Length: 155
Image (cartoon, rainbow, N blue to C red; front, side):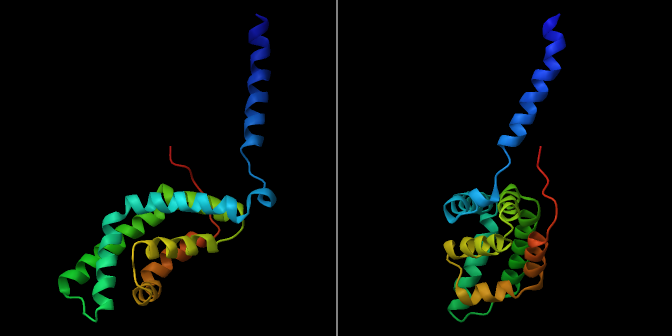
């Protein structure tokens, strides 16, 4: 009988302690040593989920670097690739992780820098990256990601 009377208090204390332990202190954690592995992990997750889109962007980047103009089929492919990448960047777990890091450290540039790193790792040329970053779809996705909105957790 005593267990049933004490159980609510014990469980409440455990929940409170767990909540305190999982909240990072920005002054302590917002160092490059803390941010870099978390951002890299999030980038790898995005890379894995959007690999086909990134391959299409890389191929277009290589063609553009060689001075080729994309044909109709490649433009259609690029449109679908950008849309798929947009969906991953809006709803994927990797971007949620990046948002948490950016929000914790109050540094929205973490997301922009991480996306640039992702594209560079895939071999996207600087010329094509500038063209992509100038694209209104890409700009709207990045601005919506860096806007201060609540982060939701997938369950």
